[in-house]
Length: 194
Image (cartoon, rainbow, N blue to C red; front, side):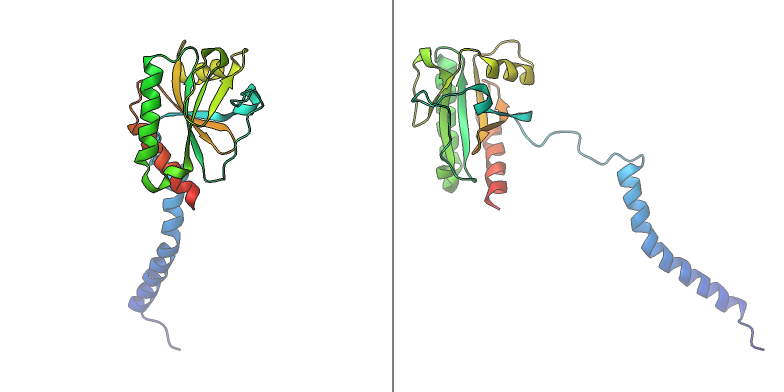
């Protein structure tokens, strides 16, 4: 009878262990990263603005278009709106944000036709700008929701990014000079293009 030699048995066992390790190590590493003690996820947000969770549907707050009718957006699925929200008369801060929004639209380059500009204000403020003017209803519920989301007890002016369905997605403070909004908008334009 032929008995295997101990060196051959040891070599066969090591080979079996090596092959098993090749298949089991990825499973072990996946478990460690998913459930284990290593927290590998980034600690910061990728966006510069305040992400509105859940996004605020403007139609649900009674926003009106420039003609006084319920807001309907005539845009395609790849379009975005940069909205200057002014809760009161258009002050110097409002004018600065309007200029920043115009610069942002130019700065996106070839995607400029996919970025629409709008002013959302009170009808009595009679502020107008560009091709899109939207009116806040008297109940001011949208402004209250945005105050809660931003943590500001009061604000008069904000910048918003709104999608083609009328969902306010991101909000920026009046101190925003445009860089953060531009970076977020570029990322959204790239994602919507695919």
